[in-house]
Length: 114
Length: 115
Image (cartoon, rainbow over all chains, first blue to last red; front, side):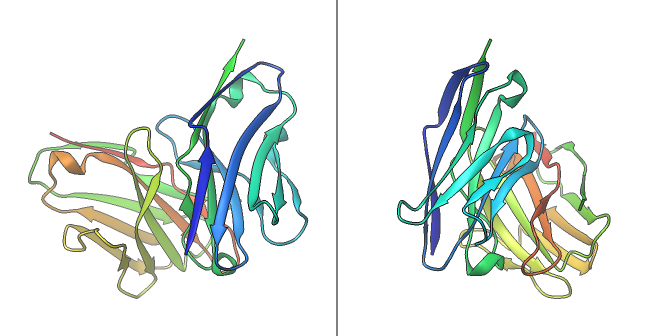
């Protein structure tokens, strides 16, 4: 069984400030972990993924995430927020080395204030 | 990169009618397709998993006779919502995967409104 918990349904930051979106996972097997972004009425765009290689994963648009097994966490960060980063962000896990469907967290809506 | 085309993007139908949603993998062979449903301001919930040429595997609580999934080719999967009712109104998203260790590519979603 696998699950994902995203702490904070809404996060608001100022433009230029650090973005930190939290994700904790539970998985009975070594997980594959993903972060996706969703803009209104659109599908999901992959930001980055962890597949048991380097624990610090760099993604698109300046985002990165660090896999911490001891904390069962995969938090998403970006040093400086941009207005265009405002969107819904989903953390997801796939067990069995990526062979199964993704299980999504509840999502975090990021607001960026000017 | 891998692209999944999903159509239609929006559809409004009358209660009792059926609606078909298509997902096509444009530049790869999708051995596995996943269908998700997303209610407003909520997360994605897996409805079913389909492998090309096989019957779909539905998640618990999903009516297989209402949500018909066909994955007859390696590039096309369809979801048909039969006898749609207002409570079926939702955002439906497909996801395709080429192989066991490749990434997941998502379609752009279909907003279904049943009136």
